[in-house]
Image (cartoon, rainbow, N blue to C red; front, side):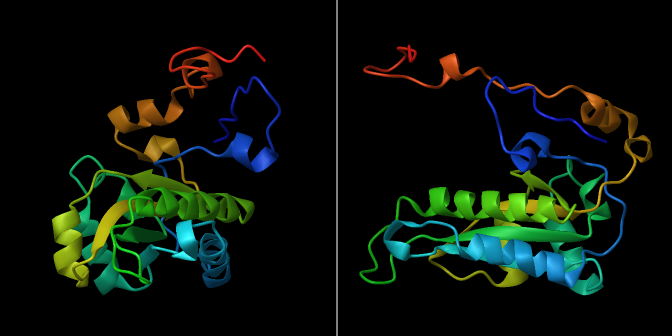
Length: 198
């Protein structure tokens, strides 16, 4: 299913195509494509070049770890996300390695790395749905995430499936048109709330 952005200004094709499907085909993710997406994350920008991102990867063809990842999902994501070819948990190191001081930019940097992961994955026709709906405590316990690292989000990755295979309520959301705030609502100049006139 294609749901291209109805953009007001020109966008590169991959960004215009990107959206977060819930229908996956249940097939494993090809190793090379997954490694390429992780390589894109590797080269993301970060504060002091800290590279605070870490990813726990649970592939469908590794059933034990995949089931542990599924167990971390919220009830709202369990009806569809287990059909993905892989589930990932993004994790942020919360302090700088050079001085052990708090890195308040860590979550920003993890988000940037995940965005590059998503665009690279899409170039391989792999779709990514990033999820806040998961138990960080369960992820920490199940995968042995140490102190000083915080689970940030989960990602379902795979080839698109058929929306008609989803439970009806979720299928309705899948088919719904995409929407976004206009730039006037989030781009300010001079003072907070003053829209850019350029």
